[in-house]
Image (tube, rainbow over the protein chains, first blue to last red):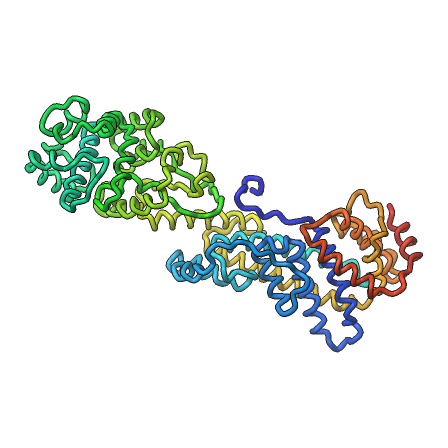
Length: 160
Length: 395
């Protein structure tokens, strides 16, 4: 189906791109000397998770995807020295609310599921349902790739 | 029943004129009402009644029959009704086209009207200018072939004739119009056609009429998705847009179905969407779980990690870039007595070498930042370890 889909482009880079990004972010974390204090396990976990997501967003396409852009924006809220957000010429984004209002009439079954999806997928709040599904597809691919990378890492690093 | 259809066209046209004359709308390209109104009083009523009640093409009245001959011989100015048709060359040409069912000009004519008559909008209703703004050419959404009309109308001949003459210099609108007219037998639909025509005209003002849809090719040219109303379906502009949208959504859902494992047997949008949502949630939970695991094993890693990553000069020849990291780890895990450092570092170095080759999308600046940070903060690099690690890794 991928070849037949010229319109929906959900190509995802190879696993190694994800791996590189993730490892680099991990090494970044390391320099912060987190791991010397074992009582901050939760903090550590959250940091690693955030690093995973950010590296995934970077690997997946950075600012060229809506969800990754939203993720990165969310992650670097106050201090954006890392990611450049190019000023893309956006179409009328103020019409989103009007779309949403009407979308409740459109196949309410689909729409309530779309609402739940919007909560899950980063950046989903401003997307129309069809665009949301594209982003979800790409997001799923990237997520599975990231999961594979992390699984490999854990397997490699865990003591036998 | 070719005749009746032609009559209906002509009849509707006339009715339009009459109504327009009522509303005093000047119509430039259309014959003035004056010649029509005078002798046609008796015709008016019957036509109007027919059109209002029927609003379809079942005009089988005497008035219709009287037109039959005229439409057949458009160039022969015979009868009173021919007096209605002025010697407007464009009009004659159009009338001539009617007899061929090509009717390209008919749509054109209708589009020239720009009026709100019940009649005008029929033509364009099937062609919706949905400004998607994107280059989405959705396969299933594409214009349904005109041949689909063959089963629509009872007049197999006429539709055959229609298809036959499609190429002949008529815009596909006309054919669509014709088929559309054949489909629309209800008042409701024709009213909806009005609105559609109005919506249709405004976006399609750039004469996209000739090249769209029929060849079923160039949607990117005008940026609109041309959609044809299928048989038995409402042709409101809103509902057509809705259908386009729904088909887009279902196409994407099919795509998602391939992605999410175990969704082949599932039918129905609701269940599918639930599955997708569950899958996304499960993936996110997996990431969280794995990050917890990673935080548990992370203290094992040495600080030489950064130094190795920072080693741009460390050009490890990795001709076949390890596509699968899991393949890399099992052969290296036997080096556990060294503390898992070297295998990881060497793998990282190979990855780093690969990274240098892959100039990814403008994040080089970011990566350089990272790398420079590592340069600054790294401890004294242990080169020997690296070299030994590399030699171990090389297969």
